[in-house]
Length: 120
Image (cartoon, rainbow, N blue to C red; front, side):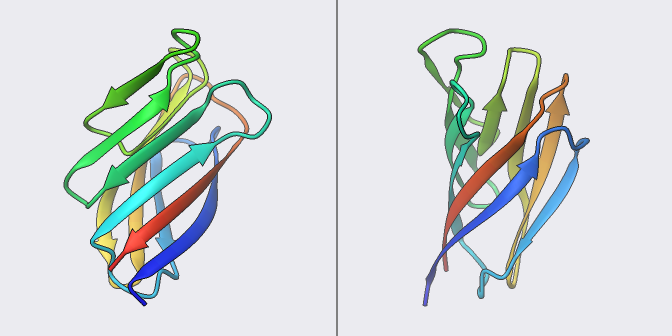
């Protein structure tokens, strides 16, 4: 098949670095992301990535209550507060998955659940 639905997690206290996602079964051309932290107000994002273009919309509750914001350089943004956040984008696409480069700012905590839809 040319479509894969998958899930993975990220400990938000983990330092800046990369996270390899494998087992897709093919080299993705485009990936859609949805991310959330259970039972927390805010901290949700929806993003798109093709390895070159990284875009998302995310819940900006930590900065501006009841607002969403767009971003044209990241495909995942988990915003706990304005200064406590984790962001990611696809930095490499391989034969069986992709690599995310994460940047941690401040002291975000907890486990983020991430879902993806990858297209061949």
